[in-house]
Length: 230
Image 1 (tube, helix red, strand yellow):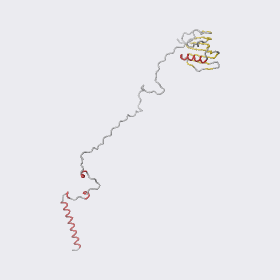
Image 2: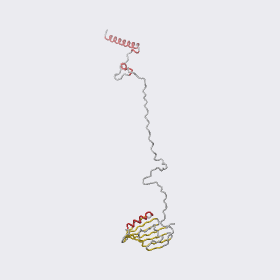
Image 3: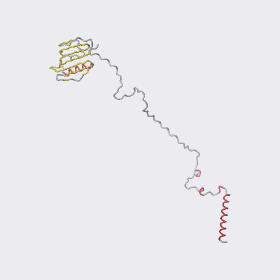
Image 4: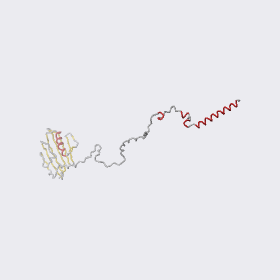
């Protein structure tokens, strides 16, 4: 045979072998068939499963539910500054310098001079009758020069002049101590070359004291004006 005939014969044999192989493959059971290489060869990087490695498997299900976070205590809401404030109570703290104190009513002061008033009179070397000695007393052991009272309606004027062995400062201290409890308040002192003059006042009542230094002590004069009350 020539080359042409040999090529045709070889081609026919190849086709016959392939056809026979396909027929045999279809006739074999499915389990005996050859799987493709991609499916039969295990991956080099894939880890074996639990079933393939022989490790025991668990049938229990993992509870993947996340427990709720505990609630945080809520702080009290901030006060609403726009809300109208209720009435104040007595427990409030007052600002410094303010004291909520109700003082009891003060007792009325007794009059320095009372009605009826004495008649107008004056005397040398002695204290006249009706002179307000409770308000304008002479210093003990004084030498009286003269005294007098003059009245008009409910007004009384009284004058007293005397000498004492006390110094001028002692005379001033004596009458300051005496007039203070009576409510006769002292006004600024007036001092001149001739002596010192003090004035004391309470409402419509007033007393003037003049003190002058003399040999052996002091000379002093009291002059008072009072409104008598019944």
